[in-house]
Length: 274
Image 1: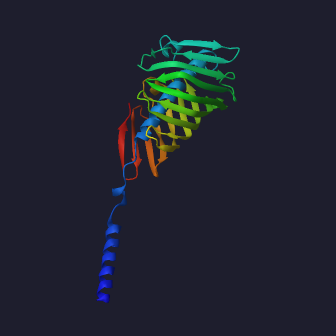
Image 2: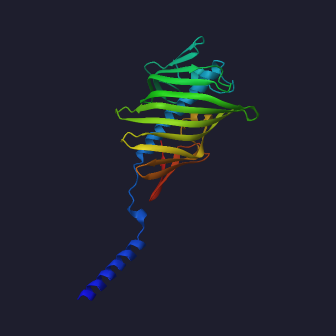
Image 3: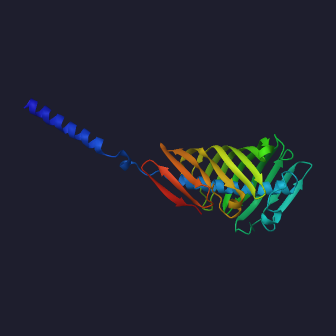
């Protein structure tokens, strides 16, 4: 009887091993919470919007190259821009509500404190916010831009860009935190700017999930897309890490659209962002 018991035990164990080897472990992996990526995309949308009109304001006030297409009145009808040259400060006041031709609504005050002409290496711009909102998303924190080098041959400026103590609050009262450390290579031309972005970011989503992200393939943003209302990069790959999962966001190879492909353990899907 003892030998018979051992035989059945071995046969059962062998069957279990064979069954385990034949199964696909990815079939049992739960889909990660993709709202983390949605939060990050919306947060970066607000900062791309900020960059777009910040460059315009600096250019119109003689602090940058005069090659951009936009004019101040295109930022938002009724916006109040105060220039304090003595203290090197520009205050952009959108008031209670200011809606531009693309339907973007902004509120509150953005303050730019600059060290000098932005085309000079070492020049800095520190951005702070007071009651500032973009389409209902309230932005807090500080954002600094440092000109880390100029390539005159290629008409390019390299910028070190950081966001510290970022808090973004949605209309429903939920909020996310965000910090980033990026290098932005800005190429200037007759059609506007083209930006290649590399670097890292971290934060906590609205659902309380902590995450980090890394640019795996440089993200590409250009002025014509931004001004047409397409705020996400037109190319590049951004990789997110959270809750023991890795999710890559592929923005494509250059098309000016709102789609990206998310790939994660166990699957992938194409999504379209607002």
